Image (tube, rainbow, N blue to C red; front, side, top):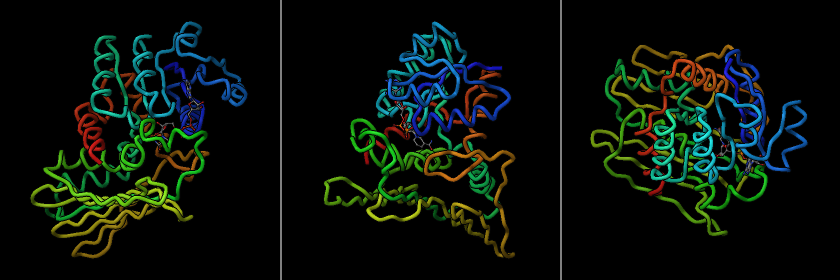
Length: 316
Ligand SMILES: NC(=O)c1ccc[n+]([C@@H]2O[C@H](COP(=O)([O-])OP(=O)(O)OC[C@H]3O[C@@H](n4cnc5c(N)ncnc54)[C@H](O)[C@@H]3O)[C@@H](O)[C@H]2O)c1
């Protein structure tokens, strides 16, 4: 059983806690947070610490799982690697490719591994998309589009999410999920075109982006919108002989022979407590990451992809 120290017990900390509890391969043995997390964290019955080093001194965990606000990822990941633990880090791994390189250098120095928890890459919906793109059964890709739209987030404690220096705003916080899928599927683009109007408070609240791949293009929309719209995310893949649409719920393939339901199913659904309905996504992500940790192999998200994605997000 892999023993994990969880760092951060806010929205995502609780998601990691609930999903790790559903796994047979790993167990959370302690929680690190701020004084404000103490009461909630202690309800789990686990020991609570204010620093990673205190937690590691008491528990010497095998893995440190970091779910703190984004601007703390670099320092927390490097500290965790110095403690000689493998490290899982919530998305985005860091706020620049340069910081991400420093994390991987610290991992090499410690002889440990970094597992960016980029959940979309571990979903079964991504597997369907990836096979359609890679197997080419319906011909070449003519156009792909991705969207991720939400009402203005009001659920994050404090203001770190709305500070570009701390969260990277929409490119690093929201669009990163799609950008990571785009780069992993199609590689780096040759150029891009972006439209991102300012809202009255001076923040860019909506991005419409076109990534140019020469023979085809990929478009994306990402927004924290001023309206109580339900969260929506999905993709559409136009191929020479078919179209696949993921509407955030079902995947339908429309080919010249008719219509096919490609929606995958999950064996384990876990409630999230955040603005995402109960899902198998985080369970699958952590299950596969812990399997990689047991084998000593890398996760799905490769470091060169991480650098490319962070570099691209930095240009938006
Ligand atoms: N994969 C996803 O679907 C998804 C969804 C939401 C957020 N996230 C990512 O998860 C991360 C956390 O986001 P959140 O929404 O949970 O934020 P949050 O503000 O709800 O929680 C952050 C937690 O970290 C704790 N913390 C702050 N400073 C700390 C420190 N120095 N030491 C230890 N703990 C500290 C806070 O007290 C809190 O418990 C972000 O990087 C975000 O991008 C990922």
